[in-house]
Length: 543
Image 1 (tube, one colour):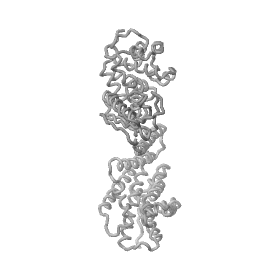
Image 2: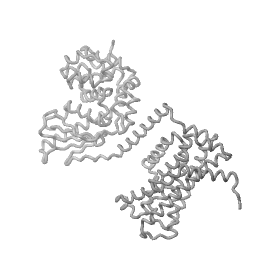
Image 3: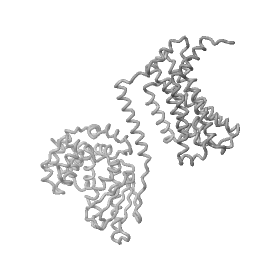
């Protein structure tokens, strides 16, 4: 009788050691998978969708088998290196790859046995309802083993990544989700995923040669990667990765985790569907970047009301279109205007719309003239804010938005800040004001202290006209960068605003710092002797 050699006896001892150390966990894996199979089978939605117990088997293999492999790999590999018990094994007179091979083969054997057991349970649960032939059974078994082997190879290599395995696992999963959603690549139709796909329970004759070859290639790559991580430099790399994280690493990984959560949230938010708004009997106008839909909130509007609706639509479309051209905006949000008979002149009511639907305003179109400066300023302010998803009404950007909305409708009528102040009869209120740097970056607080909306809008308009000192084209560039930015509906807009702050854009586009702007702004408000056209044309004011 042949006696086993020393190396074979050591390998047998290693296998016995793994069984003795982890047998409780190993015996729990079939219980876990069987419980998963029963749970999925008890869910009516999944049962009706699958149509057979073999379809439930594919779901169980997809959802629960990778979890079982993760638990097993953590026990066989990750915890071994984390607790440094592998050092005792490394003292044995065996090549290192033998030690890794025992763990790999031991885990593969358990995983394959679990997949086979699941197949037997699924066939038994079918109760003879499936016409099981030898060819069909062989196909099911080979597909199940291929998927199980792929899962084990992936998590075996993943277990050697130590403290970074969770982060890398999240990156891989999110990356696959992104590839499938953004690039249109059907991950569920690729390689190992196709083996347990929709046709797992129904394909009886066709052998998936292509998917099988891809799966075997991926298994080979992952297996080599796992052995390399466990063997390189006498397992020094795997030992280093298994060490506890430092405080600095925890901070970095927490920041990365927050980033990925924000990324997922932005994708979910972007996928959120908003129903388009439709106004029955509306007058629709599309002029360059502006799109307007106007209607009356009455069943039968009069002739005068219909004329007012058309007049307002055309007038506001021209105003928005010219502003968009100045700010270099390609497309503004849709403006919905609703005529209300019961509202007073220059009384406005904003609709509750999502920023991706547009902006809705209700007002009395008969009593409010189309050329109303108050109406145009209000609509300009709201539409530009909606264009950036309500992000312009902040401390830092609020004065730019309010100033532009107040200045644009009257830019051709007034030539200097003094003319603007006098035309609104606000000389006394504005002459005593003083602007400092804190007011430029804390506009909402400054505006609240004024307690007068007209004074605040006039002061903001004067500040915008003061920027003309640095040249008309420079002012236009600055306003376009602040108000014309096509903000995405996710965290990228916040990153953009943080990087391109208003003080940064003032310095870059106008060569003007906040202190100089505050000084010139205060002078324009307090002085009544500014030369006509000096600030509007861009000519610098003498000191």
